[in-house]
Image 1 (cartoon, one colour):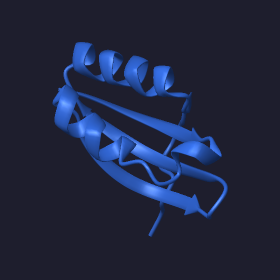
Image 2: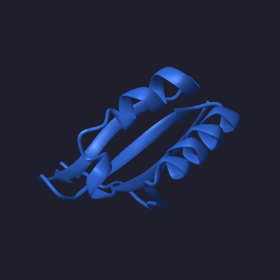
Image 3: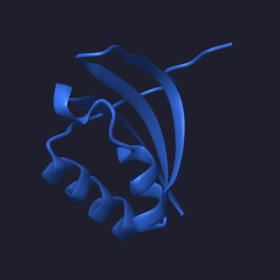
Amino acid sequence: MAKRRVTFTFPPELITEPVIHNLGQQFKVVTNIRRADVTEDRGWVVLELDGDDRDIDEGIAWVTSKGVRVDPVGGDVVEG
């Protein structure tokens, strides 16, 4: 299994959509929220994604197609 850390930045119209849940259900990717900041009009989430490389790649492509910006994250985002 591969593990990747990414940041999802959501446009206002997707704040209330269950994008992370759907990612896990549709692409066999386990999501672990490491940090997040969500308000009524903006949001970002730092996630660990666990799964096969292919499933993660397909899931990220799907999330991007929905309008979510996806950026890689290096290092551990939550210490202690």
